[in-house]
Length: 366
Image (cartoon, rainbow, N blue to C red):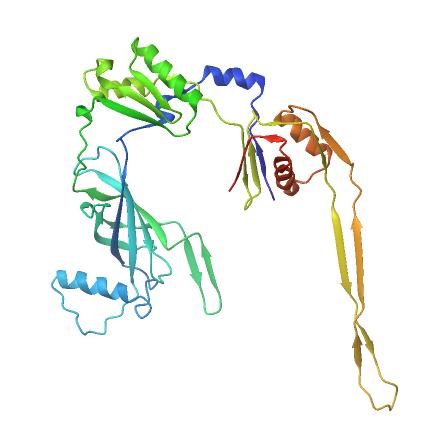
């Protein structure tokens, strides 16, 4: 069933929102303080006959041979085709300021025709960053979130058993050089750019320090002069800034997910005066073929004569419903409900209102 999620901020909730603003750390990203993606190619062993078919995945045989040779086992020319191994891609994110010896979570995904990674163990796998250098080494037992049941004539799969995770499965071997203490200026990048929000962040930071330490550069960037904060270090300055509370501004936006039929609208969505009519057109086509038999003892054969019945009906609706000028979200929903509009028709009506230029909000279709 199509679901409609409506975010209505009434006047009572509005005062509550003003009393509970958002911290700057939840609104911005600090320039340079970011994670780095890691990726590796490895081998999972110990599967219960659900591994790669080596005839269809020759790369699995290659990596298995290379690992065994590094361990001193020569399998060159041998017909070694087990079903309990699988080639996988290992991914992870190296957090900012991660130090050598720390452990991070990793995700393991099969790339061959393995049916399941349940119960498998990832063999030591180096993980590289975009520069080609090895920053972590992964190994451990995989926790997969699915299940497979298979018989001679049927197969049932629940979840995705060909992908899993290893908590704390990779150990960091190399650190990323980033000297935060040497910075004299830093940019704060807003995750949802907005001039009003950026101006409020600038005003809040300058108000806390009592002098001009922050400058709004554009709708998505606020520049911070760390030296003017007079803090002991850049880390101390950011630690003081990130907990400053700011009331963010948001755009009027309607988000529609056509796959699930979900509609999300904010309270600040406004609609100009418009009339909406919605009706249901029903077309029924029935086939009733007629079989004609030849006369007794006649030289002939049975003939099927097509008979088609077409019925076109249009349900009588309540006619036009008028939405007044500057209607709020609750008024729009009440108007659509007055038409008896089913949830599945709501998306098409909103599209039509937007096309008519009466919907004053950003319309996002996913």
